[in-house]
Image (cartoon, rainbow, N blue to C red; front, side):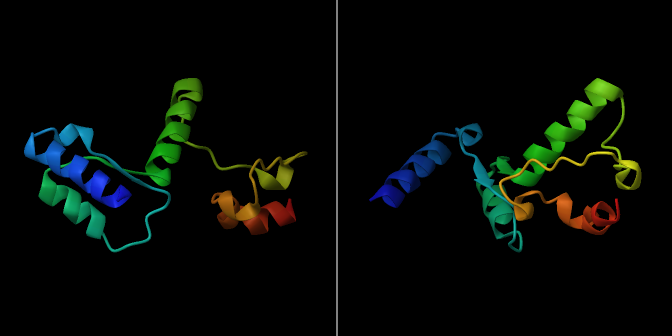
Length: 104
């Protein structure tokens, strides 16, 4: 019933040329682009993910505040490394830096 309701709302928005009222959000994309192709076929430019929302927000913040893109941390010379996350796997920037954090 819930899916039928959502499908009906999407269908009505498409039929009434209200493409800007449709948006798809996924945590981290892990598919082959199927969703992008569906949205493009519908004429909808409304795909968001954790990556583009989180990354763009972080990069914009650094640009506004410091005039730079996200810097590379100096783990080797850090006195304190504070990881704020519910668990390590959610801190996706942790994984590429894990060895340098351990060495630091």
